[in-house]
Amino acid sequence: MSDPFWQPLFIFLAAVLLAIITPLATVFASSYARRKEREDDRKDRAEVAAQVREAAKRAQEAAALLVESNAEVAAAAAKAAERTNGQLKQIHTLVNNQLTTAISTAMDGLKTGLISMKELIEVKKSLGQEPTADTIAAVAALEARISELSQQLVDRRSAAEAVAKEQKENPVDQK
Image 1: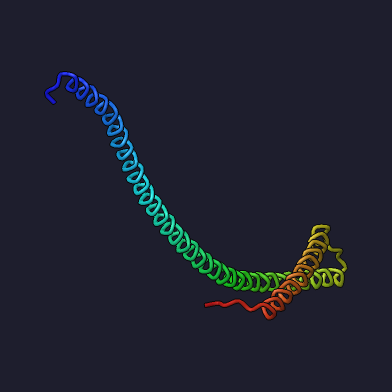
Image 2: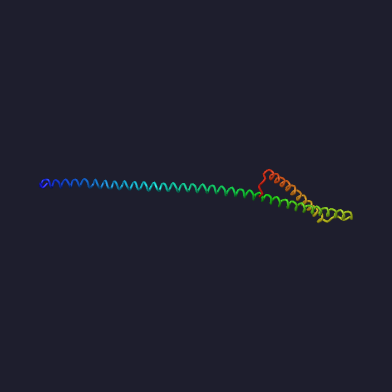
């Protein structure tokens, strides 16, 4: 190789070989790096997907627990509302009964007053005196009021019977 002809040829071939190998090595190295980046990216994506699946699973479990809890709360509220409605019906019945008794007592008092006024008119007539216009108007007003209260009592008794019938048919837990 000491021949001057071979030496430049050898240098030329070495340069050509380097010119071919260097880009190939660069391409190979960059291709390897890109492949490694893609593998790392796939692994990262797989980890993120697994985390997303786990988060979705936890969210679904939390939603199921929330739905169950809401159902329990709704059931308890419905039961409490039913119990409260039953108690309100009892209170309403008691108040209505007391009001009916008060109306009946008032009507009895008005009847007593009417009887007294009619007897007074009879006494005056037996003495030859005519009753005053105010007395006659008061008697008419009492009769009208007694008739009105009597109708109210009939209506109240019929409503009370309807409520009693409904309560017998649909008993409510009063606890």
